[in-house]
Length: 257
Image (cartoon, rainbow, N blue to C red):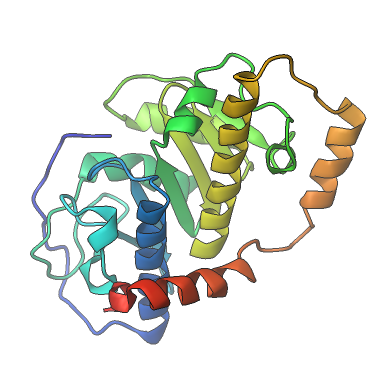
C-alpha cells in the first residue's frame, strides 16, 4: 500500500497499440476483475503489472484511484521502469506502489507479470513464524519454493528492492512478512494461477489451525509432492485461463474494452 499519488508525466509520444500489447492488456484487465471477484482487492491499493511485449522496459499497470472491478484494457497505463508514463493518459499512477514491481521485473527476466496483493489469509500466514506449512496439496506446490521478506516499513527504497529481490531469488512466490503475497509469472495467467493456489493454501492453513492439532505429511512425501506439482517447464494457467476468461465474458465482458 502507498498513499503517494504522483501525476502522470508523458515520457514519449503515443503510438498505436500492437496486437500483442492488446492481448496482454486484456489478460491483465481480466486478472484485476477476477481478483476483485475473489475479494482479493484492497480498496484502490496493490497492483498487478505486466511487461509490454517487445518493449522490455515498458510495463502496464492499473491507474491509481480505480477499483479492481472497473478496470478495462484501455484504462491500463503504460510506464517505464522509473514509473514515468509513456505516451498520453488522463490517469495518474502510483509511482511508489510500482517501485516493488519495478525491482522484481528488473531482477527476474521471467517476471513478465508481477502480482502483489494484501489478501487477509496471506497476511495472516506471513505473520506466522513458521510461514506456509505443507498442510495441503495447494501448499505443497510451494514446498521448498517459497521466499520470505521481512517488513521494512511503508516506503519502498532501492536498497530494499535489492534485498527483496535477493530474498525472492528464483522462487515463484513470496510472503512479505506482515504485508502480503507476491507471485511472478511468465504470463499473466501463470502469475494469477500461482496466486490463486497460494491464497487457497493460506486459507486452508488458517482454517486448519483453528480446528485443533495438525497432521502434516512426512518431509519425504512433501518433497515428492512438490516435485510432482512442479512440472519442469510447464507454464501454469494454460488450461485454466481460457476457462476463467469465458467465465468473465459470461458475467461482464467490458474488461476487454
